[in-house]
Image (cartoon, rainbow, N blue to C red; front, side, top):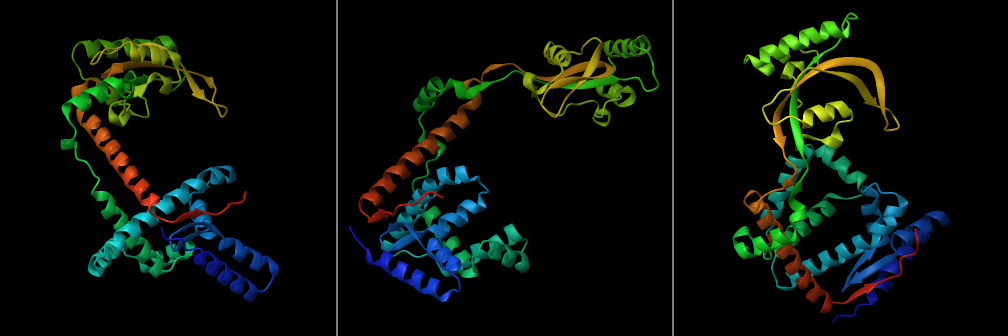
Length: 339
């Protein structure tokens, strides 16, 4: 085990020298705080400045920052141990590979816009060298963890069955429905009975085999008219605020359409309460897709289960390996005062 307390003294001396060079006691105090040590891994240190930069990027409240501080420190220690283990074996990442990944990042994340890239670095108080070093470290960490990656082929059918039976709650689905609607609303003060007559006529045409989508596009007054009244997604009961709409939609079997019904329209106010608008409309609904509440069968979720087990095996293997690295390394924590 390599105990390297000299590193802490050296970093503190540098911080103090820089602080003295800065005008003003407040600036000096700030620089000392930024360079204050929070942890040490062998001859590498983690400073308060590093911790603050990461937490600021996450846009957290002060209370959340306190909770996440230790999580960041632990992750940083783990990464330093992994990088050190890689380098201790004499392995290196070829410069050509790092250059290739560097250029890919510029294209993918910054559309190859060098000014945008420089502005990004400035916002993070980084240099291009810092960015390149972080990229190399990411590559190293990825390469070291890749050896723990399990494929779905490594997961036995027996283990899949056991996991599914013990975690059936993970595969429960709520009842949902995807409908199309034909909405008729008074455009010039038409009474309900006139609109209902129109709705009954449309219902008759549906029973005669005319397509719901066709009628919705021609006669519907819904904002979804151009899409044939299609809601566009499966929705649960909780997602429908109007109780009558909820009742009618979830009473339908897949492919069925409803009788015309009068709906007193509602909306959700700024306090989250459902309030009546004083308007009415007449609706016809068709259930395009119905998802029955229940537990999805194993055959339907087998690939998902295999992936979950493989990921869990990865985490366990990585955790055990990192624990061994910790036991063989010098790791020291420094007191982190309340923010």
